[in-house]
Image (tube, rainbow, N blue to C red; front, side):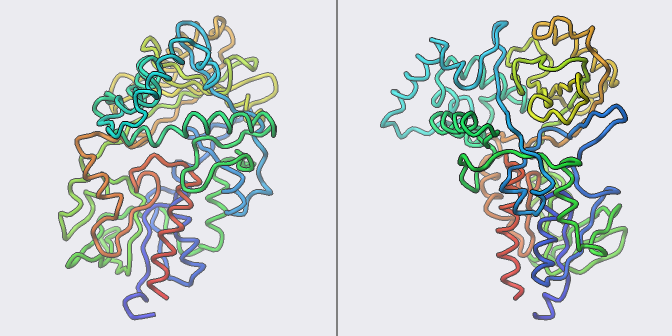
Length: 442
């Protein structure tokens, strides 16, 4: 190794992506220092347990058997045997996708859209255009577009058509994978892997002890490498190349920097160039996850219920014990309501008890006796749940996807890449970039 590469590679963030990078580089004898702003590893990939026996995840995390085997925790995982989604529309529940296909207007407009697009080379300009072209006007306008508006906090007409590519697996493939789930009695992964092929042998699992088990495994052998409560104040660039970072006022030289920070933060902390300043306008959607505890089980039509109608404050409901019964005590259940919001708006400012009661009140159309069964809630908030693909910066987003433009500065992970990707893809994409980086240092 040259004297330049004897300097450590600095990694920002001890979530799944940061720990994947550190673990791999250490295995290739590349010196590494990982700085984590918080007081523990795992970032948003954490599970919380209360004294009553309920387990809460920080939003939805999907772990496949393929990812668990790759990281080395499959022996600590339980198989998820069931996962299904429904849409609540007009006071009725429709299974996705089979139930919606039985609605005449949905099927008719979907077929019409496919016929119209046959042989056409026109590219949709927005997410709204993409949904209408792919699903037909009825499904797009009644389900997909309202859900996208609620999830992103922006009108689908103002979002890039790339949003569609991050949501759909294609109708035919979705049908096959859903059928494979029924045949194998396992929750076959559908729509949660892009980098590696989805197939009947790839299914969802859940680690004993919670999602953080993956990060704990990746952190093994990194003693002395991970520096907690050490936020990076600046990434230093000289002549278009990374020179180091500043932490607590002290300079740490670096041969490379791997950032998992949200890109709007990355744009603020790079010093010595304005090349990434435009990233500060990239937006993430804040989210509130209201974990509602109830007596009973099987209160919702299925594991996930989407609520596209604007009468509801939430756009998605998830009864996790229908899929993973061990996450709640016997005879009880947990329903997570996802509320899209903005920092400091009325939802964000609500105390936990108030937002819980709001959700319970609005659950009445689906669960008439919800108030009688309600046992309280735990509320989790994050200001950076999902990247928002606004059309106004789509060209810049595509450019950033090709690289930072600063030598030896890499951005990885869901937030760092500003991509709609899930855990397996985060791990795979990070490994690919680290292989390229390690090859330079050999």
